[in-house]
Image 1: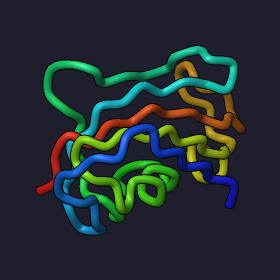
Image 2: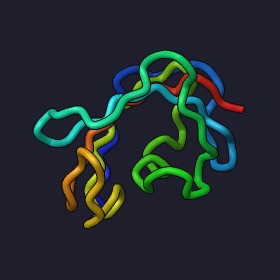
Image 3: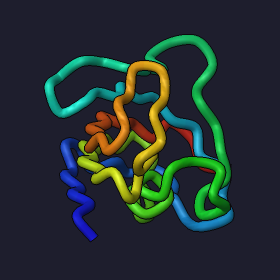
Length: 105
């Protein structure tokens, strides 16, 4: 499906599974390197894995991560925002995320 998952650091904490609430740190960039979003301090971004609360590339690309782990996700447009244009994200964009899993509940 075009999703590229690269483990940068393999964590040793609890594992991310569908139905669990994950706490994430992340930096989102376009293919040209321009940053469009980030959560690197303050309260972590949280969501329930596999419930469609985030883009498909996250729901698929974070399964199996362990707390403390870091991944680089390259997410093609169909698994991101497709042909939808968003502030800072042109339609049809492939997105790159550097993510760190900080909690699983």
